[in-house]
Image 1 (tube, one colour):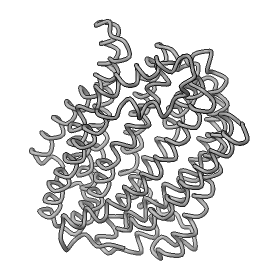
Image 2 (cartoon, rainbow, N blue to C red):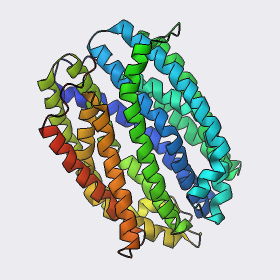
Image 3 (tube, one colour):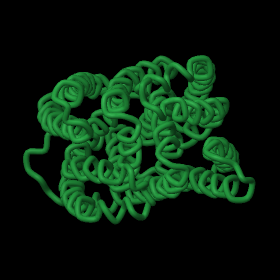
Image 4 (cartoon, rainbow, N blue to C red):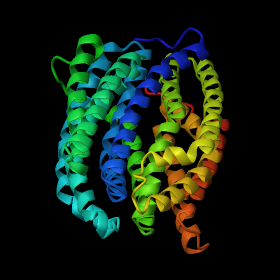
Length: 446
């Protein structure tokens, strides 16, 4: 466990975020390996099918991930306030709540998968593969939820090393399993989905027992339900869940627009999305570290220290974003080519679309850094509603801009890339105004 209410701020934020970054590098790496293996051994159509399916999966799991995020903020504040009995009860309540909700959403997702793909106007030539992949992944949706829950709670207590160890083991196992199922056994897209589920199931079981063994505050021997803590979890978790759900819904509207350009655009943007998720991890992890740092210090009534941590984290985020922009602009073509079978007749078209999309987007990574720095601070101070509003505002602006650029300006898939910095920029400006006016004051729960 780690107490952020004293000590060197810069060192604490970096040391706490680095294990998360390494862990998420492995987590994103196995997502990239999945896409690379599918693209190389199954083809561009299969890569497009995975891209469409993953957007649906993220939409259905968004609510659960948001509730987990909200619970983690509460747990972090209780830890900073030294209220350990309430902390253990909060863990108990969150497990009961999330378990019940995840089972319900799993059943609904598997049942409604065809209808969801039709709503997205998934092209006929990838529909069957997308449906197969989607149903297999959704059948095991409960496993990544429990895995994310326990790793989030460990980080809320200031422990980012144990989640790292778990992520490394799971990621290596998943990569090996994907290569075996797809490249060796020839099971195609079903093999990629099955390897994901098996790996996530192992991760969920392992993280549960590992957390119970190594983190006494997370060891719940008898489950109890506390209505006051449940309301507190909803206070923080519901806005986060709504935020991620609305963000995912906005992504689905963008996915439908992407689908209108055909499978080559879907495949190219899917490859870029995998690269982008990998590239923005330093900023995302610093944002998570900032949330925990701010939550503990605000819980201990150390506002000046919390705000200083925000300024330091923002500088780090800007540095990382500029570095990643330079790297991706230089290596865009070879990176996208990793996802393609060079003998595929559509490879050149997929590469052209993906490279154009990536080169436009990465120039504006610094705006993403501003947005996530403010968002991490607002989550930490307990301003759950505003932490929801600005990311949703960003995605809404992006969706509206994308459709406007396509239907009114006559642009092609590159419109989707230009819409991203428009959303980041306007949302960052609104976040800065909210921060400077101190409208976030008084949101701490303890």
